[in-house]
Image (cartoon, rainbow, N blue to C red; front, top):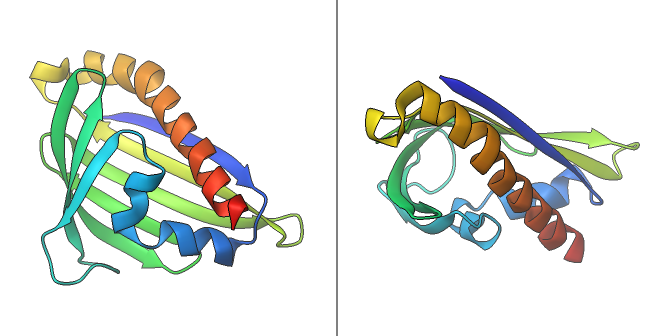
Length: 148
């Protein structure tokens, strides 16, 4: 598995940041690699929610199958990837600067199939390509949250 963590400090309280992060269907608004999200369950919030995320990074397109495994409003959202790419992911929100700002951290621990380079491709792809994409995503998230 290949682990990656990126974070951003957002000039807004945790409650405002959660308002933007909580609706999974709107993740496409700030995740440049997420093309579309389709729920597999009637439930769209909380543990047990299952969805498909059409993902595109450069020439690579795939459908990421995910299930919410952790859900603590204004604190954490965790997922299990069960499709082509497997592993876990987690968003955490931490109040900073006496609660006036939020530290948003995104952690993924992923396993890539052989045709995406397996462990070596995953290491290079995650540490180089995905790190850049996810940092861009977090900059966009901060812009949306801070714009109110």
